[in-house]
Image 1 (tube, rainbow, N blue to C red):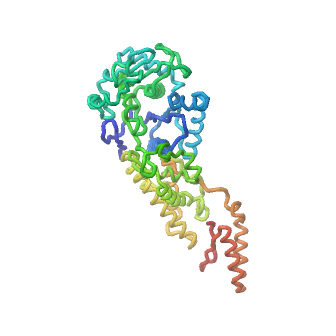
Image 2: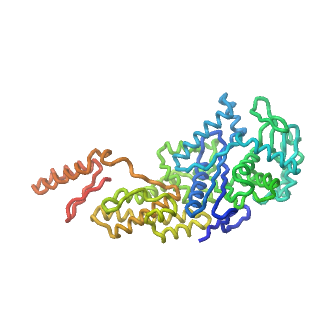
Image 3: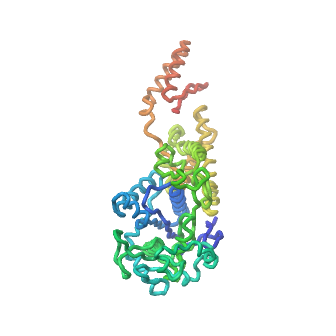
Length: 493
């Protein structure tokens, strides 16, 4: 059951082999913090959160780094519009980012480097590029000489010759950068300061870094010359990730990443999400409508991570129903464990160590789950195992409520439940029992039993009107009575 991944760089699926056995260095190109996170961010963050969880589940030690781009024209424009500062805008939306991700159940990365906190590394990398002949200064700017890097285009599959064919139509001769560059394909590593803009000192004059150099420097500073996984959205393949490779590998002479993984894009009702179309939805807007965060995770995970997905009201409704099924299975032990004679604790932590810690999990279900997910992070396939377990537990719960016993031995059901909770934890799908139902419903278990005895006395006295009144009173408080030859049982709805 070898893990194989589709590598954007090689355009094929390959066995996963890390630079250092048993350890994974993983970097995800994070968000530019000028606004609230939207559904596209939700999809990406959920995917890479689960990739990290799964790698840990199968035994890897993962160091996961996610950056914040906090130097950018969009941040600066928002700061100017709000009569604020770039730092204040970035801080506000970084705080909002953590709030949104917490609601989605995203585990925090090991570190969140910011461009403004990596300035020494950025300047060092530009200096190294200049010394090696891959960068040149021009009136306070510094540009990367694309044609000096012979492998430029290897990630995206684009060739300079093909891009040059229509380049004349895209050239803006009024752009001052056009006359500074030695070649139209060259891109900025350092931008000279403009009046009123934030700036940092450098050997080339006051200014600020270009977008692409920021990530190259943060990867190098936090994880070294070569990492195992570089992840991001498919929209970043060109030019961002292509330029990262050119910058980093020109200096180190080593591969920047062994595996380049990219998640697919998000559409809303079949169209690309954009503010101009009025279909731009932030994570907090969606969740504030009452959409369950776990339904959002399910919507993301039921699609292969590299394919586009479409957020529609119908899709959300469908995944909400699916979550109700999965949630019922996840709550089975809390609702029925005591009756089945279990000692119910948290069922699992989402790791294979659960078996070693005394948790009873099914090897056969674990193996099936891994066999499916090991095929390029096939989370939709993994979910089929979870739903199989959840539906069976839900069925056994219904039998227990109506017949007072289950078809499957309690020990086997406990193993199935703990397996389900463990595997769901790998996917970040969690359900916990709500506050004590007796408090919510207003009746304790003892009070319910007393009501049932009153009803039984009424029935023996053939006072069926009183018997029905008590049943209806309990039903109104969310308690269903089930009469059988063995007596009357009840459960909370």
